[in-house]
Length: 273
Image (cartoon, rainbow, N blue to C red; front, side, top):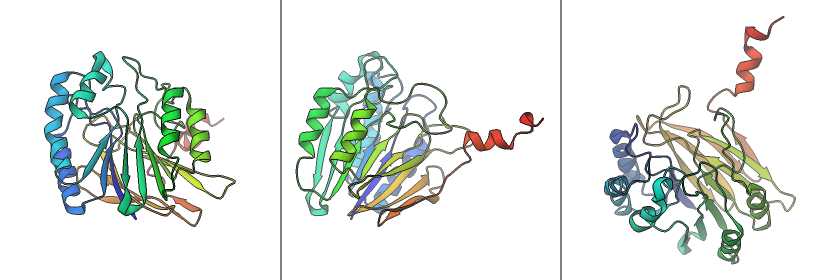
């Protein structure tokens, strides 16, 4: 079994909450996961001083366990990808956990000074080579959405070539895709005809007040074992854990953390005749 903690959308220097980051570091120290993965927007404006200051927190996580980060659109502002690579780490990376029979591949969906995401043919070729080996548990991490999610606003949030990545998850039997971007914890599971399943998991903002509706800052605690999956949302303020998803033997139970927009609309008296 591989144990992953997913943090995302830290937004250092904009509504940043130091207390939440301290709670996350303490949680990581107590649980000692195999890896912590940050799915983008580490900082808010791509400034070199922001990257240098947030690194002080990230280094404390690195002292405990393995760490991977992928850049988000806010990291890419003001040519920030240059500083991301110099200070935080490579814009794309691969970590193989041999003792856990697991692989996590992080890819860059961010582009300089634009909000939308794109992967591109060269990265598609690269991740294909990463997964062209016999490893049981397979995870991809990126910032932007592959599938739109409810309660996340109406901006264009999906990767422009999302179709290619979705097809890739089928062809290479990817177990889990980690994403951030719109600060809404959510999940979808697709069962493919080849009897494999892929769960697309989204994280809330972990260390900022840039939440939606009445959400709290949060992160995901993940347990993946030969295709079986358990995901918990952890409140970054009080560290309360709530089951989000359980997938076993190709049966998925998803516990929605909020009502969807359509449910609010159907319950509204505005539409009564």
